Length: 226
Ligand SMILES: Nc1ncnc2c1ncn2[C@@H]1O[C@H](COP(=O)(O)OP(=O)(O)OP(=O)(O)O)[C@@H](O)[C@H]1O
Ligand SMILES: [Mg+2]
Image 1 (cartoon, rainbow, N blue to C red):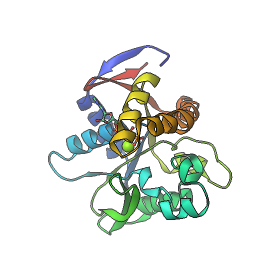
Image 2: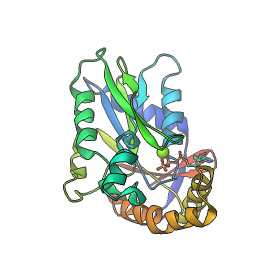
Image 3: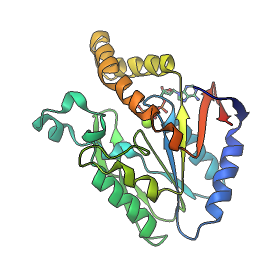
């Protein structure tokens, strides 16, 4: 959480997206990256809803939709590592980002979403059609390649990428609460946070320098790093 931050507002962020998107002929793809529990999904929903006040011009394309299924992870013995960079279908994520870029506005592009109730992706949970602004949000948008996962190709498909930062203690508290709500015992939640989430968060933190903008949250407000 280094550097000086100055208060910004959701409307200033929305104005920036509108302005940058207006300069593009096709779809405008904005990435929102950050550690687990930082508030990426919340920020994305707030941005989308504000952008869509007059007409539906924006939609969210969550990276979470590309979690490998529990069945696949269980079969390969990787279920406990779910959420780490090699437990996603990076190639399919890249393919669909390309499809969003290449498909003419008005033609359907299905996008999977992650269902936190069943802990598995739902194919075609969202269908893009006329939207010209895509908010793609997730943990690994600015990562280097990991094994055969070509994460470094993601940034090239984005017009811009923002990093939403959050203090480690806040992330830890939110993730513990979420895991317990999701059915884990407090001890199992604590193990998951310590042995998986916080390690992922530390890896993601190394990608912050690649972001076009670094934000953090203050209550319901946002601050921008200068
Ligand atoms: N601006 C905010 N003020 C207060 N609470 C917030 C805010 N943004 C997010 N939260 C809370 O923090 C938790 C995590 O937020 P969110 O799900 O948006 O994070 P995320 O970065 O998408 O996490 P993940 O990477 O695990 O998907 C949620 O319980 C949410 O309600
Ligand atoms: Mg999220």
